[in-house]
Amino acid sequence: MEDLQTIALPRDGRQSERALTIFKGVGRLMRSFDFACVPELTLPNHRRADVCGLGRNGEIWIVEIKSSVEDFRADGKWQDYLEFCDRFFFATLPDVPADIFPGTAGLMISDGFGADVIRESPVDKLAAARRKALTLRLARQVAHRLHTAIDPASAAGVG
Image (cartoon, rainbow, N blue to C red; front, top):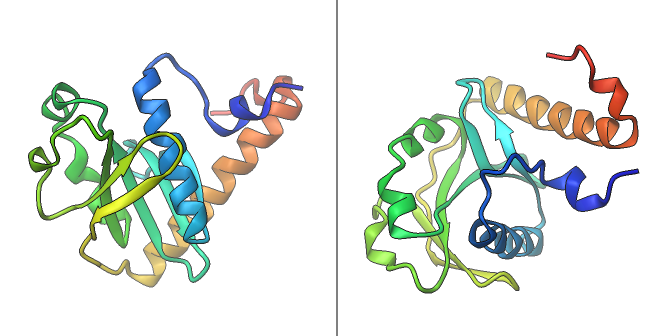
């Protein structure tokens, strides 16, 4: 059986060590808020959210990881995530200037051992039908990852 980190975070070579450090701290913070989180969630618009969190009450947060100023400047797609969450955050490392991130989004700072919310995200509640569809999408993607980790041959032919 593959190790648990492989199950949790499918590696495709796009995640730098800095991004993985941010993810670890963000995941720990979200867990402390009683959120279940999943990395690399494919959304209905085919974008992949770096981290998607599901709260006990069904609230959905998306966190976009930015490991450097260059990483943020090269990414023009973050607004494509806003219609799929109740709250949207950027997350970065302490050495990345916080003032580069738009004030219209929340901000988390992660050191890999934990993270802090530096700026709260505005709340834009999802419609009930969209919330249900996203919750089902999250559950199915996580279940497929777990099944594939247990039985890698099961993924053959799955689109």
